[in-house]
Length: 495
Ligand code: BG6
Image (cartoon, rainbow, N blue to C red; front, side, top):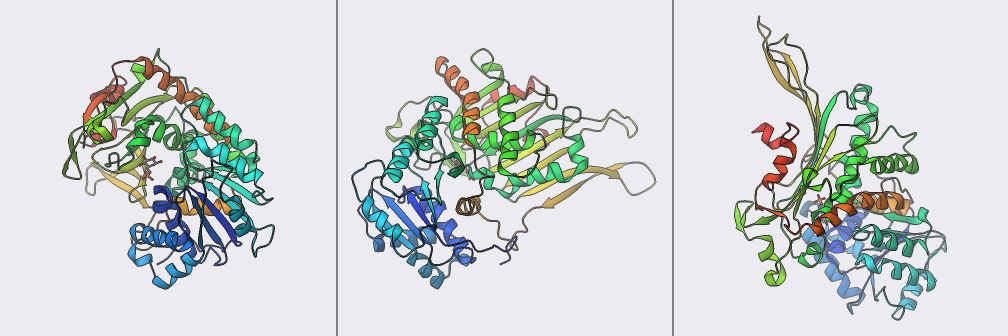
């Protein structure tokens, strides 16, 4: 199968994963490394060292890894001989990274055996974030950190501004910012990166990318799934922390940022931070007018009846956690002042869909009858990555009737180019030491700075979330949010 571009092999490395028996490692991290190994980017003398508390040996961990590959990698990408060669690179050390006792010596001697001292070492932290500081400390104090070490932090970085700062300070005490890689897998999605190309490689779009031409922007990340057995984590988090604080705000920054001086990591991230810092604050005084939150009740998902959120929680506990958020953000700068950025994300929506809709302003002219509605640029992030921009053309014949045609670009040719999972590129970027698609400390904190007052406002609001039936586009309050400005969510316009 063709790849988008051939992948340059990287130098051999060691990847140490904390939280190696967890869901993320099995679903995403091991499959990502396997695919890059199968494509020839990962040299076979690299090592992947899983660590977790379970008492496993190399062989039993390899068996788990084999099952994970079978469950999460497409059958046509699984070749037995390649899987076996990959699994030979996999090791396991039973260790609680948050405690200083334990087999740190075993991990150290494994990492130091038979390799050059300057070999790249990546520590991937896929545990609960409140352990990150302790793990970083132990890695440093036990002498595991080398000149060529990097540390990758999975989201969430904290649960509010204060805890995020704590995580950042805890890890920052032992690793310089240049070797800390905070992952946001949405930045690894081709279609999200493509927004930067669309905006800055097309002078026409670049000139129109402002309040004079754009009426509003909608960014949606909808999922059909519910809790998927993650109730413990999700109920303490909710949609605002789980999706908006990181993924959707990251997408917003690439849609809204000023032209960066270059594509270098810091040039890009400087501009993204500036957007976050220019977001108008939402707090208890303006929350109701700008934010809708919902929780699903019984309904359908993928055509089957599904229970309410509260029934899915262990012990069916009453809960005010939001499974849906829609909000109106505004960027207070010359380019965007007055243009609403509508963000929404929810579980148990009618379809799995991530999309950016840029609505251009309507025309004035009555030349062709009624004033033409403004064009709508749609960037489909997933599934079936595409960019569409409908244009009006003359209907063939004598009169000036109009037809709408779609300028459509499919970003991935289904069946021809394998659209790489976002974790693949990001995991290898950490090996290469390329931080452009990772989130800098000040970015995470600026995002939390904006989100935390919303959480505080909700805490004081005893009404709790509105309800919506599973399988619908969220509560009425989400539609009301736009109605006030004479706007509609994209599926309502299309209906
Ligand atoms: C994760 C969230 O970060 O992103 C999950 O914790 C969510 O709740 C997932 O399901 C969505 O990712 P994607 O790539 O499927 O849109």
